[in-house]
Length: 213
Length: 213
Image 1: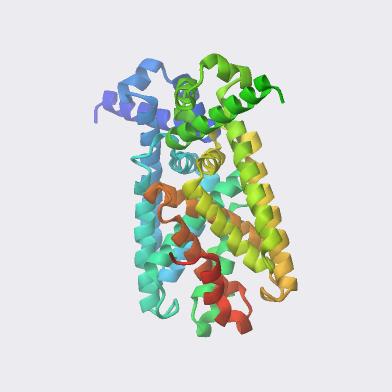
Image 2 (image 1 turned 60 degrees about the vertical axis):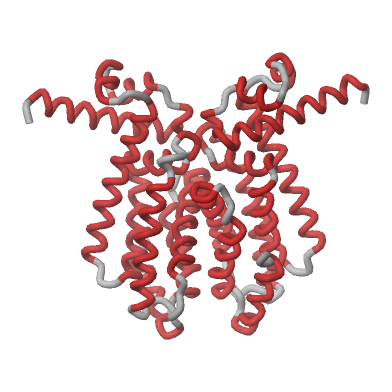
């Protein structure tokens, strides 16, 4: 890369970081391009060099969030020993990122704020649903979940439930209680889905994925 | 009421109905006052006679939704025989209204679209959380839920989970599958929260609250 290209990449990253802060605080509807250039410390000309519109900036933030979340998920899937542990750790990891990573929390906020992105909205949900459906199937085959567990139905409850939990946590505590609420979600769910003979390992599974710190 | 007052009430209702359609389709950010006057069939002057701003119209839609939902909830609480049945029927009823009542679906959409209403956002959740916490407590005391059920924790999972389920159903099917998904949520939850001796009445409870039509 030439110096000029490197500078362009850096400017693009600065815009995405600035935009993430603005979108997280003000939402898509409440954010203006002036807010974004001010937060990013770039000129309007620099912004228009990289993005045609506010919608394009927002899509870039969602894309950046999706890349971060996908990389993190891949790392987790590579290092866990079983599919149920993967499900818990994916939820725990995303809960952590939603409280600390400015791009992740902005991307998820834009995703849940359906108003302006109706067409691109379904994609992130589809990826999570597919991942959790595959993990549910694998966990059932491995005997970690009860025999006969309906993978589509369970995955299609866990992902929307997680979505709602992070939203309500955002409304009440700006996600300060998110990790605890996600742990509670699993405290309620696990006794229903784990086979009777594994009930006494639930506490251990929860503690491994959501250590109380 | 004088004829003039009656006409003013009717105009206000027309504006709320028109605004509900626009907000549901376009979200708060995507809706303009011109869209609302066009959908309501009123002049801009008539709109400004009743509302100072788009935000005020949106708050009136949320308020109208809250009145409808509260009246419906009161009727259910008056006619059910037990607190657990109340919880199921409240969810079923709201799922039905979210698919058929234009004001309810617009009000809930505006509520979940946090961007513009941060201060007024928490109120509808607080009401639902308080209702479900009281019902969970009563159901536990009545032996309909397992002894030792943590009412705050369970209510604080059911309400966010329902919120997420209706959102994701909106994204994928414009809520066409909502009743089924809410039933599935309870199919997963009930075995975890109902005491062992009542497990065989789960199917009956589900069928009563969510008849497969």
